[in-house]
Image 1 (spheres, rainbow, N blue to C red):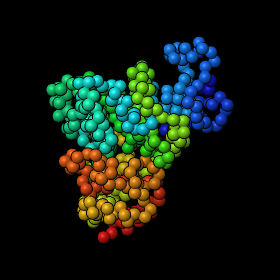
Image 2 (tube, rainbow, N blue to C red):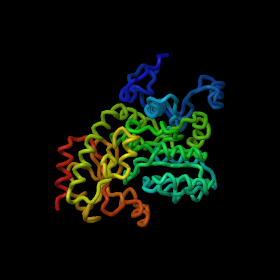
Image 3 (cartoon, rainbow, N blue to C red):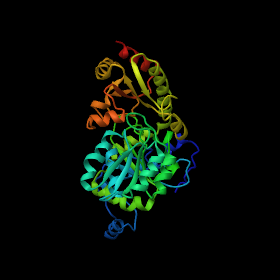
Image 4 (spheres, helix red, strand yellow):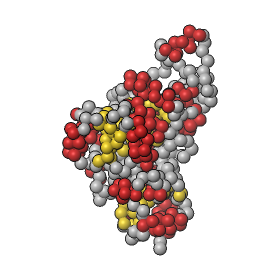
Length: 402
């Protein structure tokens, strides 16, 4: 077997990581489109089902194309670290988050998290898990002393769930401090790293137990496939309890989406560099525009989490949001005037995407909560793409005119 090469660069790992030579010597791992796999003998089938022998059985449990995507992301999240990770690819980011909660929590347990989460996660915590006896405690996690006091008073809190930068206010929380507090109280600590990607931020550096991604976003990068991944550093737990729940919930990925994801990840480093460079210039432009009330971008010194983001991220990233002075009607007029930039939900693609969180991604969040979270009627979320910056700025300029 070919010896694993010790990649010195993240970009090299993004291209070559996770790949094993395909038996028929295809350059790229093919799309395995088989629902099931045959055994050489009855005894081999028995060994595979019992776990005595590794090998593929049924596509809901995995296939070679899926394995490559899982291993590549695990290598990227552990790049430069001295411990292995186990990744399980899912049909969506929400499927990965569901597996995380249902494999780690039971009736009576609580999840401590913060405001301004992705709308789907917020809905899962507030509208689905409570019927199973699992509830969320929401607080301002930037007040770390308050977090410590809260955990002292409530032993039912079993997990600390973080999302940084958060959607859509770009709120950032301190991974190192919060993980330390969580560990002191015996909690599992999980982090959604979708906005940052492992190129900009590696939560496992801070003793985090689990990381989730919507792979639909920057990891794929081209808007061609839905997916999600759950990664963990407790390999035994990932192979047993977590894998069992994943398989039984049925939120598995498929060979075609995994193939598209693998191809997309090969350009992650160079895409993120251009995304970040463009986003910084867009944020500075919007910060001084007369039609804009406020810009949420952690790369701006005015952002309340500027120091935290600078400490744990390589760059502030590609995501930002901004409030228009004319509120909802101003937002509608602005979105309708866009020519090159794209009006759509989601994020992470190479083209610039803009959406209205209050009426779209966070539609299901109550008005009271939206205001509390900073999701105003005039808030626009922006995924800054990799187009030429002069074209992005020109489109914004003409759309912002009265």
